[in-house]
Image 1 (cartoon, helix red, strand yellow):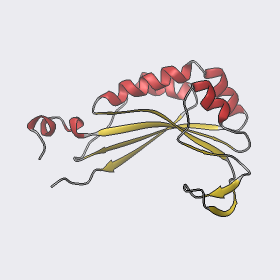
Image 2 (cartoon, helix red, strand yellow; image 1 turned 180 degrees about the vertical axis):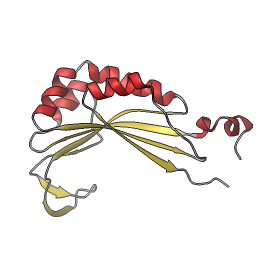
Image 3 (cartoon, helix red, strand yellow; image 1 turned 180 degrees about the horizontal axis):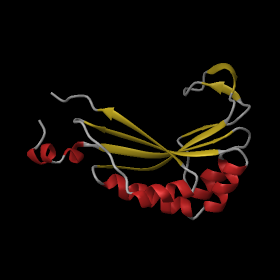
Image 4 (cartoon, helix red, strand yellow; image 1 turned 120 degrees about the vertical axis):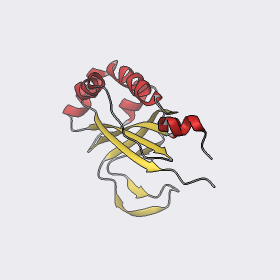
Length: 149
């Protein structure tokens, strides 16, 4: 059962995760993950044999390099402040990110939010401008948490 405070403020029932997805058609993603000082949770390299997450072989090779970098988690209204902090961190590496994009790579925030109730989301224009200036795409996926009994 949800508390009265959670019902009054649905943000209190929501959790979130922020990841940076790094992709490139030819290059390894090591340069980006090392520069940011974040160990990737998933890495594949263009041209290598495909495998399942359990390292069982699959047909073919990876068409692009990919890694996922965990940037933060939290609950409720902390989403915007965590996203601002992640963007400040990326801004310190703006030259590397520009070079990455010019050579064919892409960068995308991948944000998942999950909760028990309906919710809307708005981000401040200055934050969206900062993200856009870095050339980072913004993806948001909303998931409904399972109802607790």
